[in-house]
Image 1 (cartoon, rainbow, N blue to C red):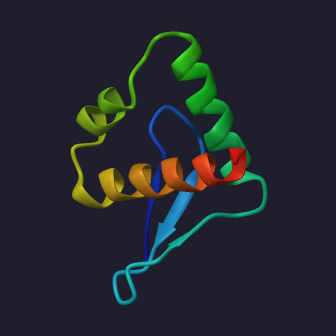
Image 2: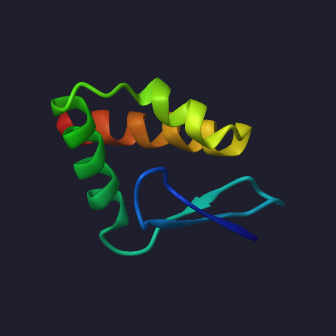
Image 3: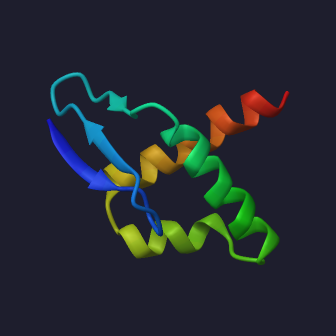
Length: 74
């Protein structure tokens, strides 16, 4: 299991190198959603977060979280 922080937050995310799954603690998806809303409001693009992280795993997580947040809005 490895850990990293979601870009521009203190949200710590766990990544299983065996099953390639991500784990978030209670309310962390809400915090990430708030960061994405704020970034959108401020005119920042999620592509910027991809450049900042530079990691394939983190880029994949950003895409997954984006889909989850999109599904929650529907």
